[in-house]
Image 1 (cartoon, rainbow, N blue to C red):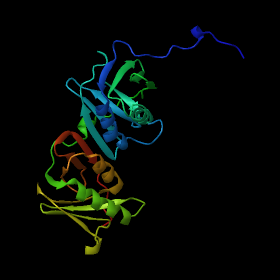
Image 2: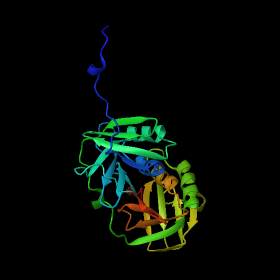
Image 3: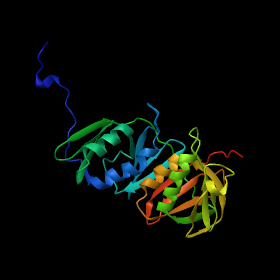
Image 4: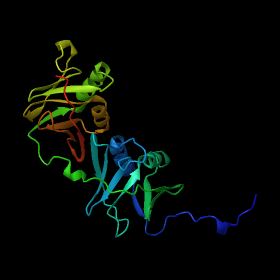
Amino acid sequence: MRRCGDAEFPKLPSVDEKAVTIDGNSLRSVIHKTGFAASTKERHPLNGIYFNLLENKTEVVATDNVQLAIASFASLELDESSDGFILPTKAATDITRTFANSSEIKIARIENQILFADEHTTLTTRLIKSEYPRYDEIVPKSLEGHVVVPKDPVLEATRKILLLSDPAHFKIYLNIDTQKIRMSAKHAPSDAEVETVAVESGTGNVNICVNSRNLINILERIETEVLSLEFSSALYPLVVKAIGEEAYICMLAAMLSDD
């Protein structure tokens, strides 16, 4: 065994004057609201959370091509050449745990790495080197119908349907009109197999099938009491928006019905 001098060890990245300070709650919140939608496949470009550094805000995005979540917070100006970066999902989880109680967090980008720090701890991770999909082209600009509903009854009903659904697909069928949403685990259920939630307002109607576990993940992260479900047809995605928090948008791909 040979002793090494300090000069032989690689120099670790450190916080400098170019670091940007952001609100800790905001960073933890956008990670919580989007990270669930990232792909779980290792070494995949979508196995991460994309921070899109726009002029007036930072959009935080995750998708696995079945579900998509978009949140936003204050603009980050890390450097002039940076228009965004993909943070590995595991690193995002480490950040929320490491800085769980930090009121402020410093961020600095150093080539293909990014650094997060508070007064006690510094966490550095390599970024995913890939071009993120044009998610803004995936989210529909307008949809034909929508309903406004209270979140908690929809979440409770979806959890009940999950227990009845086939674990091979976890399908939930949503029969939506301007008066109510009928929710079931089957395409043609009996009345006893249906959960019903009253609609506060809306236009249009649709019969659409989505993954109940994915829908629960979204509903659990909405912090407002009321939400909007937007739709076009049984073949188009279902868009979920938090009423009162317009910066948070989620989308679920429709599943094929068993009829």
